[in-house]
Image (cartoon, rainbow, N blue to C red):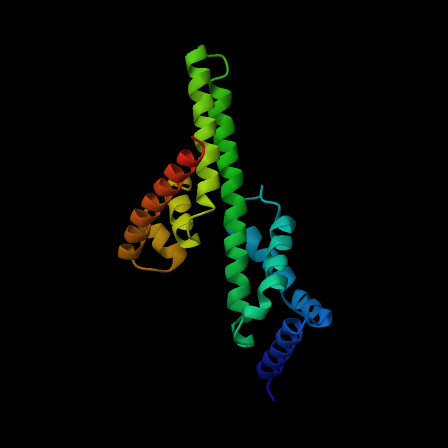
Length: 190
């Protein structure tokens, strides 16, 4: 047996044990991947993201959903996908909050009309945040990369590993889904 086949066997056994609810299997997966995941999250986000918080979310998802994994060999790709999603979500929320605070702080000494506009902006941002969580992740991801991270379509295609046409399509449908969710929420609150 080669070293790779031994590691693959070890991984498969740990995944199967974790799927059966065996804490030792889950602990083994944590030992095999947590340090590597920590480095991955640090590299794909900015320094203000709390890596430990992201990792805690990742392992919670793993604990809750490992039973849905069909093939133990798919575990690493699935795990990194979860980590990527959680890291970007945490990072995006932090950036949105910082941008909003900057906008609000810039207008604190202005006229009462601007205070009303800022209050409306704050309400819109809060509504958008709630609605972003309601649209599919692939739509949320492209909107955040395009409008929050100011990435070009090509950069987005590189990040999510798809064609430019797919990026354009996802952004189009994502905008429509977000606007529909926001309209629905506004209607519910009337």
